[in-house]
Image (cartoon, rainbow, N blue to C red; front, top):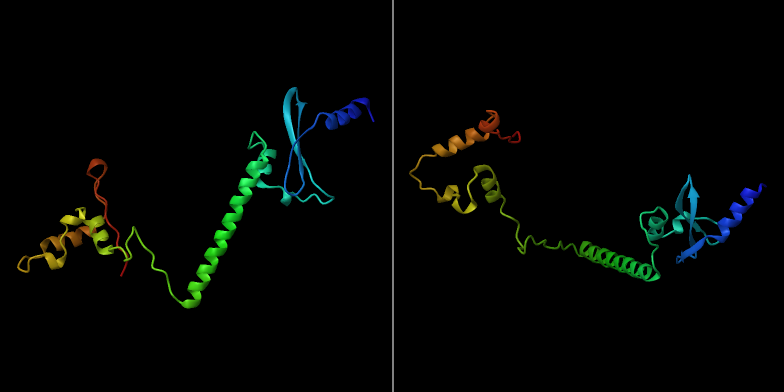
Length: 180
């Protein structure tokens, strides 16, 4: 071996700094070295044991190894994240158990929408969307006087099935209705 290679190998082990250890016993190191005339930080992991299983590396350490984090994760941060993951697992188990009980009893939970236990009024929504008038000013067929003709309904129906017309400021979009 050449002297240069030998000194580089010795320098690798002498100048490395251990940054941390994870729960699985993997150790993480860093070293500043010269690459192409610039000083770069090199980060790596030494696995515990003979099998180098990269799936044992926690996400926080992977981010640090890839340079997505500047600082290595602290033991306090790792403990907090582990506790959070454990809480999420417990919540998942509780939800699965509740869902299974509901499935066994055949009772479907009532889903509330904006604090209401009933379903939304789709007719008023559709009228508001297609007529352009606010819902409080809209009148249903039961609210109209019996003696008036329904000319406005006929024009509204004809307008609803029109093709787009005009361009620029005079553009009027047509409406599409599903085929019956």
